[in-house]
Length: 133
Image 1 (tube, rainbow, N blue to C red):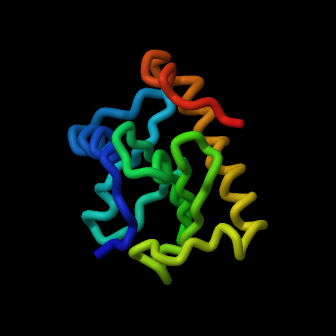
Image 2 (cartoon, rainbow, N blue to C red; image 1 turned 30 degrees about the vertical axis):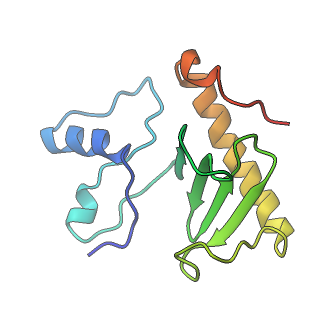
């Protein structure tokens, strides 16, 4: 059994792996094949898990997971929450205020992925998105 989390974007890479078709080399693919997880191995995830929701509760518009850590961004990217998932699976203890250095590091990684998505994704998807301060 693998304890590696999966996300919807992994389906594309997994299906291609199952049918023996390589991933396109000219695009950034966020997902990874989950076939190793089916064998009880941990898949390698070169791009950390990242997700965003157009319809979301206040305070949780986009998020990124890196190892045991998860950063959650509010709709306008003005407020961030920080969680250590292995110790707080229900995300009840926001560590953003008590761990400013870790929060700053995670924000830097968050925006690195976000900029890549903005650069490659269809413009119509992002035009309604709030601009970062």
